[in-house]
Image (tube, rainbow, N blue to C red; front, top):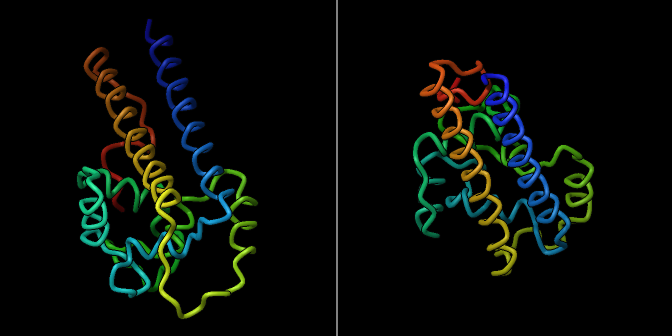
Length: 176
């Protein structure tokens, strides 16, 4: 019985992550999606980073409910906190490099192609993503958070059924 539950858990992880992966690729293949412009929605003061408060404000502005755990997941787990700018990192900050890590699919060539197509044609000008592109971006972020919540629900179910769960990176503490 236990192996089937673990198999179900792993199958769910694979299925949910593959959906997220497809959404990342679709977003990056959209020629109107500019990662730097998308990051600026979080970096509301143009400081080169976004704090948890900045991220919470952006999500609230667009009626996306996020918990502290959701923000930790995006910053520390998906954003790869600590992998970039170690000398500049603050525990509550999300840098552009972390953002690129968040939106980067497993085949990072898609991200490289998207970034290479940007030739600073609009340097120094304020930008917004077209509405449908921004909606696509928000849908991707919602999918990331929905994936986290689904995985946590299955994890809790395993704990309730068996009193045990594998020690995965998806433990409740994402912060360093």
